[in-house]
Length: 197
Image (cartoon, rainbow, N blue to C red; front, side, top):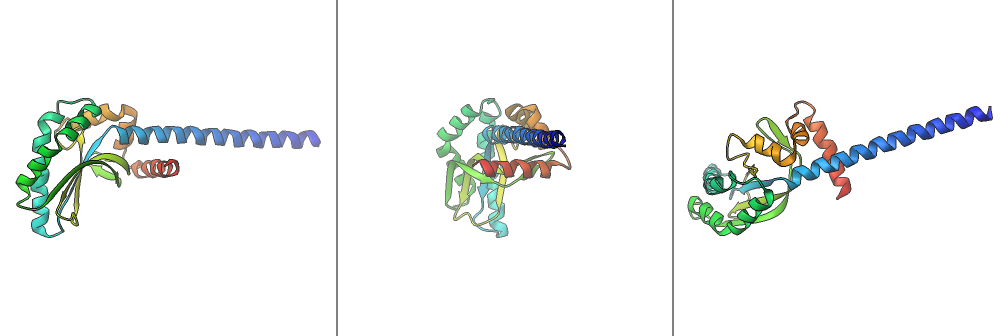
């Protein structure tokens, strides 16, 4: 009887060890996926003065002006560090482009690290997380937001999804495009990200 109890204990220990090993492997994978996504992108965040219809229209004009300025340069870039350097050095020109469409509203433009919620963009979604972000704030920035990805240039051209796949890796891109289970996968990635920060 004693030998049988020792065997059960060892089987239980083995099962626990296997479960722990699988959990740690999944955690390492999740952290790597989140990190690749967050580190491979520069997002654009435009905040309107208010939710007034006119302010929302101006926000979209500012968005278009900023994207028109960024598009020719960013579409030719394949390296995030190069794109980030360009955006950082071009902040005065980006601000000027935004001001040209802002109809006299105060404009603030910064390149910063910012927390984003999970967002769906056509056929793919990006998980919540901290991303490098080009923020364009009109006035006090109390109105609805507009988000997209400026590097790789997902909101700038039709080849954006291919560029996004190149930036984050094919396996990670498949997670972004998965239908149905995307929310669950992102929730798990977000929970893990919150635990490790």
